Length: 168
Image 1: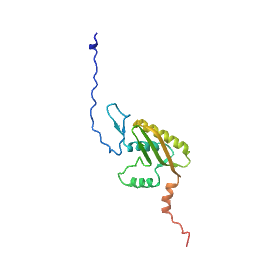
Image 2 (image 1 turned 180 degrees about the vertical axis):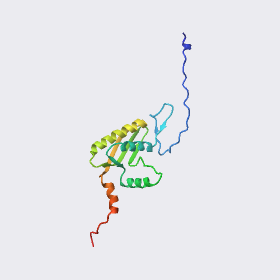
Image 3 (image 1 turned 90 degrees about the vertical axis):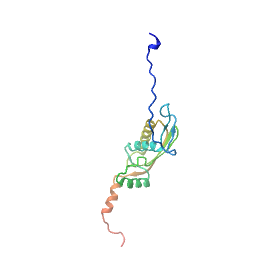
Image 4 (image 1 turned 60 degrees about the vertical axis):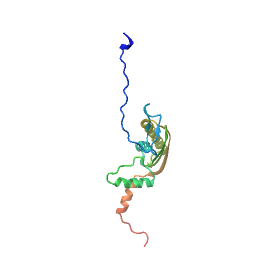
């Protein structure tokens, strides 16, 4: 048998697909990500959504964002057809091969905040690195408030009850 009798497979060129362009201010070229045949651009908002979802998956996280951001988020959610802002309370800095994440959140009362932060950090790093291929250099967590079980109900009950004035 000669060497010429062995069939050889020639690689077929990949089909070209159109890709929606990302504004240059939001896009980051990640040279270390993707196939050898091109570059992959990952927008900051993509990383922040992944980090926001990964944070919300951890038990003990009540809400993301500071007071003003949460107030705007609640108003936005009341608008018919609107969607939850998954990146609320999350800011990111994305480079060519690395990302840094800052998270602002409200914790549930009774949760060990140190353990909560560790679980969030681990889940965010895992999700971002797995989905984007970027190395996460740091995840900074700022706990801005603690949520008590009765906090949400107290505001509604205050409107329904009438009390006598303290001063005449």
